[in-house]
Length: 141
Image (cartoon, rainbow, N blue to C red; front, side, top):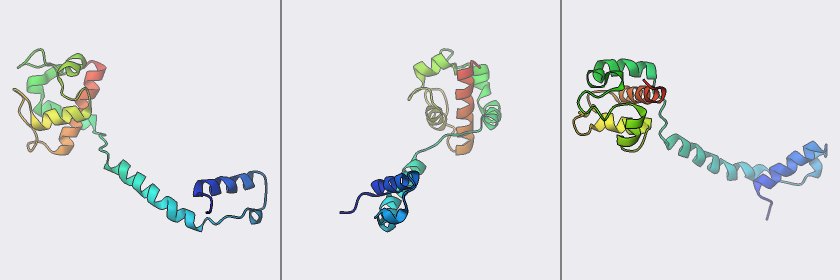
């Protein structure tokens, strides 16, 4: 059995580090790419399948002002005063904990007196406003 690709690569590096001529290092790297490529492809797919939330808080502020501020101005809640957008209240009441993902779920689906904004706002607007809300909550509004 030939050595695994990692061992062959390590051997090649060692030969370079000690100025050994590569002709003295007996290995076949031709199959290494075929063995490594599927692993790299799987890792890339796994990373790309994971949702990444990188909303634009500046755009989210605009969405908030136009859609949320009537009830949540300054991070407050005029309908249910204990359920504010302050960090402590989000920690206590927001399903899923304090995260952009949890705010996206709440804004999209609504809950209790809060209406659902899914279908009324784009996914991008919801992600942006969620980013804005989390940033504001963490900085104390």
